[in-house]
Image 1 (cartoon, helix red, strand yellow):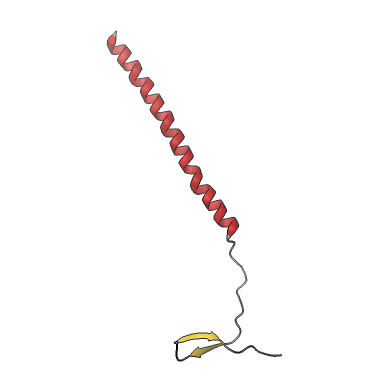
Image 2 (tube, helix red, strand yellow):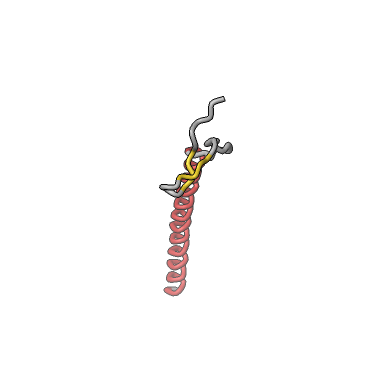
Length: 72
């Protein structure tokens, strides 16, 4: 009879451990989804490119910079 009780205790422990692991895994999986949802609603990328006008080469810095504003 003691081996049967040992097997029942082991099965009950296994079931309890599986439930705890399932709860931990389910809870940890929701956090990244929430963070991902917040990130997409907070910073939506712009589809339109900004028009900087005419770019001119700056010899001192070695990069292109917007030129003077054009008047029409």
